[in-house]
Length: 291
Image (cartoon, rainbow, N blue to C red; front, side):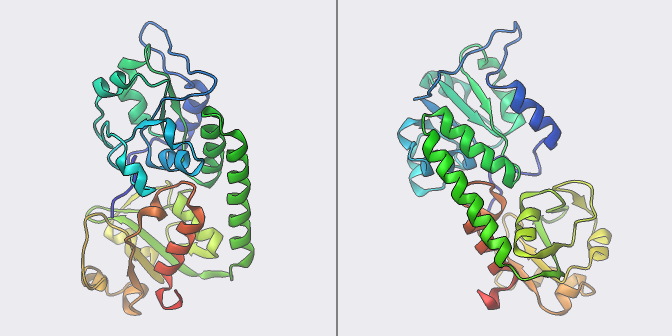
């Protein structure tokens, strides 16, 4: 499993993202010139897996010229040409495609694209949490002339979330810790997409007392959180026994009761239109015996 591009550990704070969303319908070059996006974009480069998936769900795959190597949902997205990944973009390849819109959800990608600002319109569309995902559906849909489909999709996603919330048992007595990286530890904190999914499902986030959405925590802090369930979604881990690594933390309630589970589906850490699928995957990872 890998964290989708851009990694939540690399994202700027939401306040910065919100500001850029207002200021960046297009990027300025050093001289203040901007490349203006057309009313309806027909040649789009998508540099965010969540935005790529949204384009495909809206039936706008034909306008997609290229994507990143991490854009793998739906499978058809993998067939599009690649122009880079989380850490490196080919500006020459992007410029050569002559897009009339480049979609990003990473401040880092906005900065990488600055040399093309006078030639290529760049739209920053944040997707850090459920409300932003819903807004992104509408923003992307309107940008490519799929406004009606986007409105319908947003309505359906809102209904799915509301139905799951209404139907969820109150399991707030079960404290869940969602780990996205080991050594050092990074976890899903308050305000993160995973935190919101846990809330919809009725669970408590064991990391809810921390200060950031994706904080780095010490082993001591991890022990203090004392989760009842630990979901290990760490990258690059392929262990047959999910308890093998965590047995060193034998005082954790989750370890003592054997409620340590591997999460191999990155849909849970990829805010996008597959919210219902993310909820199902997370619920199964917390209580696999019920799945």
